[in-house]
Length: 482
RNA sequence: CGGGGCGUAGCGCAGUCCGGUAGCGCGUCCGCUUUGGGAGCGGAAGGUCCCGGGUUCGAAUCCCGGCGCCCCGACCA
Image (cartoon, rainbow, N blue to C red; front, side, top):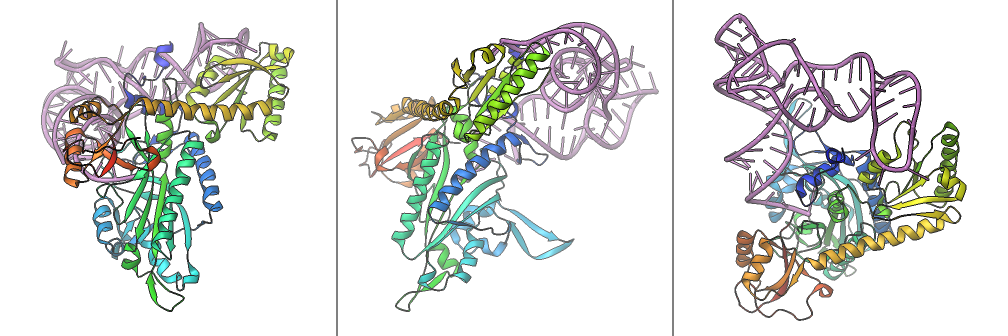
């Protein structure tokens, strides 16, 4: 019985586990259109929590939301050389409207740099107009060859920030500020530790000067790029003539940044915390932090436990907790437990006649452990429980990452073997030659995820390139990636 | 675009080799009994067997041609 209702385990088939978990938790489903995703209410609720937290962070740092259109004139994409090269192959193009062939085809945005900077050119006149700090929540379309729910779909939801600055230093500071916000969000909300660092030229955003990213390690030891922040330099400013007049009366090009995180983070959440019974959702992002399951035998008990459950729900909600009561009849408590566990609800409170008598509830944590706790002072207790689970999830994920990280392999062979058995992150010296980077990718299927920021680097900087034996110019972090 | 798998009830599948009343499990609906870790019994509803041709007295099954989805590889947040 339990066999047929269980999902494939991570050890059996990680990919099947991921797909079945999403179905079981009702997070998303495949749409009739190839590669597109329907985000179901349980999944969308997580996205809404993410949006709220991030939006607050953006606003607190002076950003404003705006909305730019879905359609972009095709000629716009072509204005920045690297950009067009990067995105042209994966755009969807609208050629007809109202039954007529359009004079100029419209590209469905794969990202909005071009349309946004064309407008910035109009709005920015003077140094007094700078900086412009803008963000938009939007959908984008990229015609990917292979898709997976949340991780890579033809259409996905994200936020894209776009800013314009007076100097390169200011743009760089913005780029790094956002990178730090992303990192904080991923650690404090998703409880997903990330390594931040600089992308190599081969891996950077098409059209950027520099790209920084947040890299997380999933339970199958593959890396997930969870967010990127780009210093665009003056590339787009020059392509779209975004200029301003200085205090001295000179005309100068602005310096831009752009940055984004997407619904892909939900995939990261799943693959960071999920277990063989289903989703484990960090409490700060959970749609329901607590589910109360009333338990009864007689009608009288049903009425009593239900009333008590609703009262408890009201108390906890008043204290700012997201709580729901599972009042369904004709479903045994055990069946409800399995269902809520699959959905990842962090805490469950069982409330039966025994608890009514004792003044307790039976508190079960999604991460394990079940014990009676007094209803008195429960709200305070739950806030503490939430904080504790949030910390525990992050620590567990960090420990897993460290256990699957290799620093300073002794030899090229050790480096290859580690990647060959899907070992995780490997830090090693790199000579900086793009041809070598490509050869490593070719032979090991691993890519340089980033050149880690100082705090992530090894205590002793590597002196030689792991592949060529030549002097190393940087320490790089490799992994096989999603 | 290559390689593999699959399309049959809401979901998961059997039936296809060897043509002959379209089935099983779960779910759903009704009734009664149940409810501290996936309830039981009784009754019921639910199908263009992916689509189009062909062979045949007769096709889910055989033949031809399409389409779609999933998985694995080459591009990517």
